[in-house]
Length: 538
Ligand code: NOJ
Image (cartoon, rainbow, N blue to C red; front, top):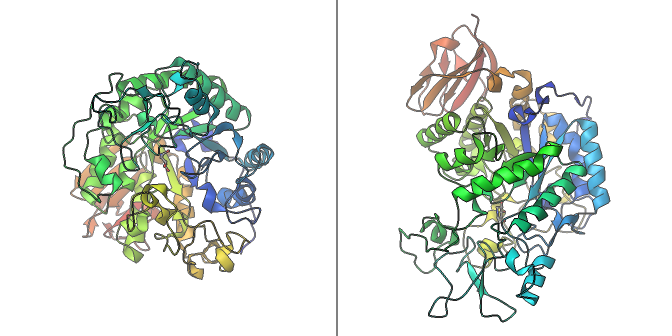
């Protein structure tokens, strides 16, 4: 592997309070990124050792998935103590070292806060169960059973079954959980919960966090009357829990106006330390999304998750991007995949085709307002992992054999072509996946200038090298079906997601700044499924 020759610690495009707007983020799925202590599970020391790698790739912000104390039933998204590190991933001292190394390299850090629910092992929940009249009871959502003794309403969990489980303390009430029964939902109508989370934000900001990715940000407030959600499709036996969930309109358990209002309190809490708030916002509705981010008083930004969910659908992709660009006032965080979704290369057709499409849409995203995120391994063009062992993802493991599983996106990062791709020195990784071939490893790709890694590095570097891409006025010059042509200052960006080459006369005399595929631009014609950035001669 080539030695790192130069790490750029000065990032002028990140200056000022709005620094996040031009930033490129990188999602680290902590379990699968790098194992520092050889137990088969990724950890904070492993990440620290790889921060120079991320700095070299040109990343500005590292978002690390939850590493707090947790029983690990949803791999960290079930938090038992928000202010401590789980021994599986290290210690608070390891975090401090990680934060110091990030500073040294000029990297910013986003901690993944999980406020919709805690673990049932959290002291708050234990107290809430133990003492129904005590102060912690109202930290969670309790309801009496329906007249037939069953769950209080028709809400379903994302992970299968009803969103209600009977109080293990025997009170006869049900508690609400939009995910596992071991992930009870917090009651955001109780101001004490906000106070607790304000302290949690301050704790991590004091220890070096620059911002927060907020899990299930669209879900915090629920209808106070706990009304049934409208159902628009029948639910049949054996259906995937994601399909069951999608059979309802989640107007009472998610996407509430009150949540957008609540985030003003978060913003007030985050302001003294200048922390950036980035919501995981599965709103599926641009108006609601804009309500959370656009006026600058609630969240700074939210992930536009839609583009990471579907298959290759150029028209829909462009419609979505343009709609969010128009209405979200720059509060978008763009991504093509994350740890909950199939990897973009596989979703978009697999192999060379999937990679070409992934590069085209990613390059286009860098020319839209807002942040742009890379999911670990995307820079290598990784497809979905081939799973060998048992399913780890609780969403599928608890719902029967053969269900689509998020595990496909959670395979270990392939650092080398050695045993277990250099992810761990343990005899096995926490998840059993087929080894990746040498040409998909960091080791090989860093050495080959024609690799996906180098193409990604150039793409990531566009944000700092060409700030006009996200700072200059966004001008949609033309849209011909599946091709859009944008002007940003003296840059012309043509994103041709269609299957035919498209003539873009504006690029005829332009000097090429970036092409998402080799020779994507010839004589002013942009190749299919390619994005070109050019600088106008005049
Ligand atoms: C979204 C997270 O990304 C996912 O991994 C998790 O299972 C759910 N929220 C519940 O916290």
